[in-house]
Amino acid sequence: TESKYRRHGGNLKTRSTELGSAVTGSSLTTALPASTTVKKSVVLSSESRKELAKQAKVTKEERRAQIDGRHRYLISRLADGIDLSEQQVEETIISDDKFQLIEQFFAPSGLKKLLFFYQDVLQQKSNASLRSDGSTNSLPQKKLFITMGSTEDFTGTCAFFLRTSDEVITASNVSQEVNFGMFDCTNGNILQGLEFFLSQIMLPALKSQQNWGAVKEGLKNIQIQEFLYSVDKFVGTLSSSRQNIEDKIQLTKVDIDIYVRNLQNPSDYISAG
Image (cartoon, helix red, strand yellow):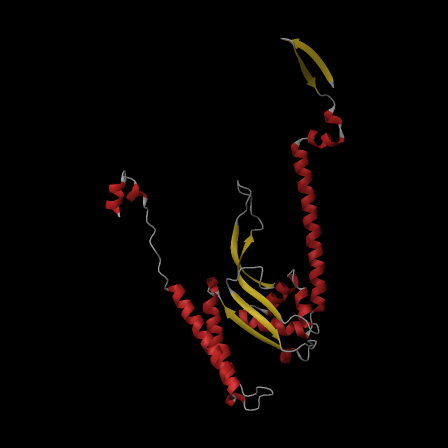
């Protein structure tokens, strides 16, 4: 650093010219042309994308090799319910980040439920260009994915598998130990979807149930009758809640400024009141 001192009006002023900063390690990068840095970043990001794609392909093939009769049962139920091909469902499952939840569902004393959402999600175009604000063009597209049910908004169709016991799920017992169901909440109409599922599917199935396990009297048992009555009553509550929401009163927004703009004294307020 070269410093020169000058006196002006009795005050000492220092004028410093810093030299050599461009040759320090930290400043060398900033001294490079911007185009060189950008090109290097592009090359690195391109190589990273290729490596990630390669790893994803290896992971998919490893998962595909794990698919057995249990997975085939899930895949066939999903394909029938959502109207997709079994190949499409398989590709979706082995590409899903939450694939391990399926194995946890099959394990002894494993997960009690396995959920799939099929709904619109924003998908970025592969050739999308950046906008001026840094965002990209995205379009809603139907997608099937595994979910815990607590992190994503539910706006479409839910397909679920429920275990009936804590036994390990095998290819030979999967059809007996696992129940499959669906309910539709298109456009986020969860109350309507749940009401339809209970009233049109679950209640008719329960009322036609002949085998109630240890309860030998079946539908003649007072506890069974009370249970069915409570479910029926709950469905009625859902229905009335949905109707109240749909028929709610929308109050018109009023601009009160036009009423108070010319109020000058107490008598004006009294008159306005």
